[in-house]
Image 1: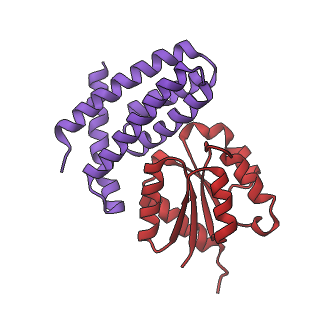
Image 2: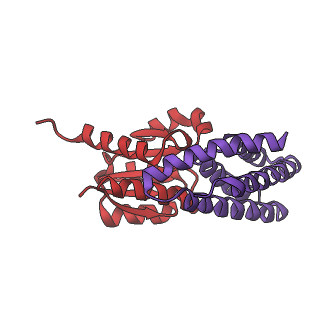
Length: 127
Length: 120
């Protein structure tokens, strides 16, 4: 079973994502801030991370930078869940190593789960 | 008119919550209660943060509320909250105060409309 770490301080968003991803067959761990998220990543070696940007303690940008600065995590897929007006920062996010950037309000949890599945499938070796 | 905006948002919220209910197996009532409670709490905390002069906390709280509000389909309120977030981020405390007051009124209207007709 693939493991997903959801780093999201918004309880409702976290619940929705966790429920949709669990229904899709993933094992999901939710972390409510950047510090807890980094600890969860270190602890559970996830296959993918869903990362909010504006987080307590350690913000999403810093979480992404620390992930990419860790050799073992350099290729870990990280999907940024942003609000629409973060658009001016998209290039900055890509340069920092974001695998995908999605807008929260434009994707239902089910659609987000589909993005997760597609992202993971693209990374699997072709047979 | 705030009441017209609230009515427009209520229609969008009803549609979006039905989709979210399909996605998650939760009921629209559960989702609605979760969103309204969380948003009410964030706005109340934002009032306190603004009174304390902590604009960065206002930004964080309102950003979170705007995100969930957008997920739940209330586009008008989400836009107002985003504008409020930008005012707070720019250090414009007086403008943020006014915007927060307006957002709370709109949220109250929307809550009333939703409590009047969406429960399943």
